[in-house]
Image (cartoon, rainbow over all chains, first blue to last red; front, top):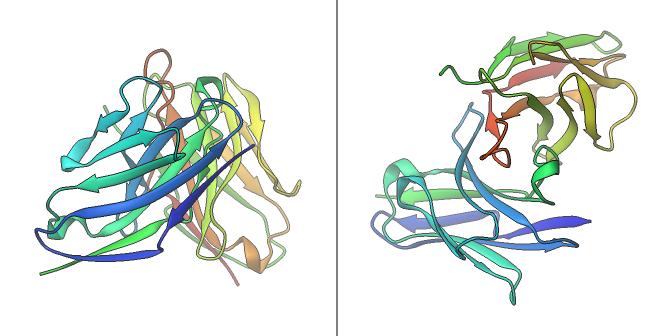
Length: 115
Length: 114
């Protein structure tokens, strides 16, 4: 069984400030972890993924995430927010490659960026 | 390469009707998954197809069904529509080999049931 908890359904930051979106997971097997972004009226776009290689993962648009097994966390960060980062972000867990299509998603965090 | 395409983008149906949604994966992708997204339930996994076979299934009633064709295109069908079926239905495809753990999503079909 697997689950994902995203802490904070809404996060608001000022442009240029640090972005921190929190994700904690639960998985009975070594997890594959993902962050996706969804802009209004669009599908999800993969930002980055963790698949048991490096614990610090860099993604697109300046985002990165760190896998911490001891804390069962996979928080998403970006040093400096840009207005274009305003969107909804989803953390997801998949129980291994064979089940890549059966991902469990968190409830999402809406990021607002204030000028 | 063209991305995942879904048709139609918007659909309005009446309770009791049935509906068929279509998904064309990225060329070369053989795995297709379907998700339902609603404000109340978030993103929920419906089913996954690989090489015309259903590989995984979520916890949805039998009114929800799907299939995959030999060219990897997939359809999902919902029979006897209920108001609660109003949602954004997302399709995602995955490549074979390295990167098969990634999903590429289409823009979705927004279904409204009245």
